[in-house]
Amino acid sequence: MRKLNFYEFSKTLPILFLFLLVACGSSHEEKSDTENIEATGEIIAELTSPPFAPKPIGSRPARKVIVDMEILEQEMEMANGVSYIYWTFGGTVPGSFIRTRLGDEVEFTLKNHPENKLPHNIDLHAVTGPGGGATSSFVAPGHEITFSFKTLNPGLYVYHCATAPVGMHIANGMYGLILVEPPGGLPLVDKEFYVMQGDFYTKGNHGDPGLQPFDMQKAVDEDADYVVFNGNTHALVGDDALTANVGETIRLFVGNGGPNLTSAFHVIGEIFDRVHVEGGDLVNHNVQTTNIPPGGAAMVEFEVEAPGTLVLVDHAIFRAFNKGALGMLKVEGSENSKVYSGTIQEGIYQPEGGTIQEMPGAGPAPAQPTAASLDERIDLGKQIYAQTCLACHQAEGQGIPSAFPPLANSDFLNADVDRAIGIVLHGLSGEITVNGSTYNSVMTAQTLSDEEVANVLTYVYNSWGNNGTEVTPVMVTRVKSSH
Ligand SMILES: [Cu+2]
Image 1: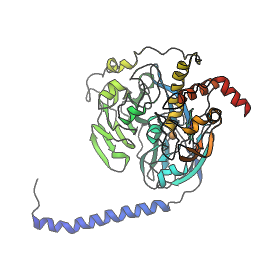
Image 2: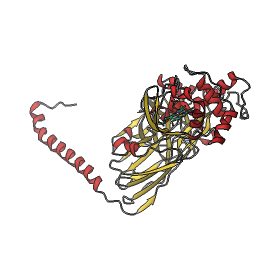
Image 3: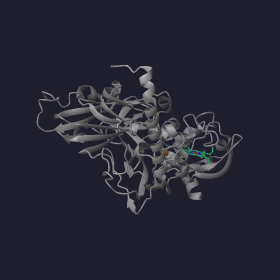
Image 4: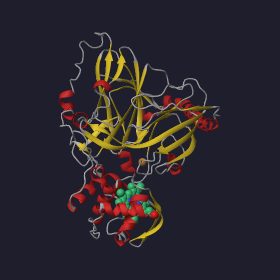
């Protein structure tokens, strides 16, 4: 390549300057323009569950878009024989896909199902405003809240719950994607899919059967048991694999909920023709692997030229074959020997990924156990604590300063057992003083059986320096009927 000498270079400078001026000028204009785009008329947003995305916006003008989303806490399968209590936006991990256009006015209603145990909120990275909406959307179980925002920047954005402890809400599956299309929409493709990676932390190791509670320490240590696409190890394999036909153009909306791990997103057997890097305007071409950080996204586009099974992985490859970050795109059609001679054998990756499938089944869920001794009551209570109370009162009952009071060595707890039973049964609000600090917050009523209330409180009373009281179901029933 010929080098410019200084003289030639100085001649090009003014042109360069002019170019920069125009570039800066236009981008400033764009931003103020988007604030002023008028939203006319009203539509109800089409929300879709993964792996599908709603219909493209096409040529529609900016509108008022009504989004109605329900938070559901529910047990679902993490892997064969392994289940987990997921906290979800819309009943799936990732949550429902929201598709908007630049300049839309989104009226967002967030509902927290009455049977949920925890308050939640939503932080949408597409929102310009405090906490991305989180400060306006905090909602307790059995309540709903509405807020609105205008989409000012096109791109693909993550949304997630931002309720303390934030990491735990995200680790339990509270994330999804919201797309803001430019006017006129993204170029049309034949198939679009919605895929989101997440890392999960369980008390047991990868594959240990049964209902697995969240493990806070492993999450802090970033020591994931599962790294998966769309919430579990099998969301995109077998009958649930993505499908396409030879010659089709594909767009993957790929997000990463984290909470911790950056994805080296790669499709085995394909080269990305285009990647909207970080979900923004910058388009890179001919990419093998793209980095997607937690709380980030990318749009990945390619044409499928030959039949066979393409394999979606996190190319930090132990995550794919040993932790679950593996999905499939089955391409059907006639051979194209110009591109590839021979078919990728389907299931070629199964022997390694298959370890997940070979775990012994957990069998039918056992009937609710009744404690026969104090030790058993404490054991059962410990499990309930991990699933129900830990999120707020923390693993060692230490609480969170000025948000959640401690249960460890709590003078308030130890002073009155009937009051403690009442708090778990009916919830608590208003100012209280625990170990000299005041709290003025809300604990929602917990939906537990009398036996469970007895067990969990017995566990608490027999842990962390508390006074060793045994709470029996009879005591719980008595408090209930005296109320
Ligand atoms: Cu949440």
